[in-house]
Image (tube, rainbow, N blue to C red; front, side, top):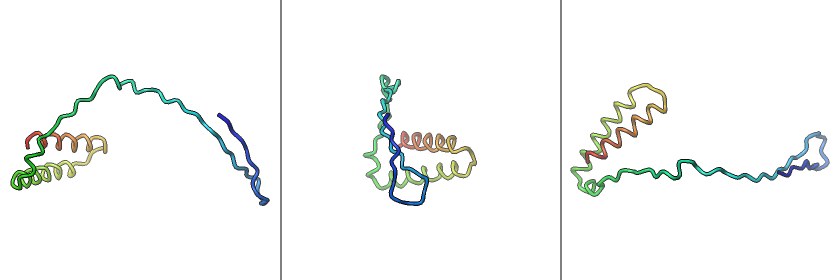
Length: 91
């Protein structure tokens, strides 16, 4: 790391500009060896109007129930994610 205090223009102030250069080495993620397997959904069915409408209504109703519950943001996010995953599997 290099650091330097630089005097500014002729101004009635006792402040100096400080400039620094940092070099960071980031550690590799320890979980990088483990691959996350994500589920794939058959979204081709959503091209059908009836199926899409049914999916939208079910998802909307389920999410409204989740939003009505008061909980911590992390818990609420997990519930939203779980709701979307289960509705996606049921397409």
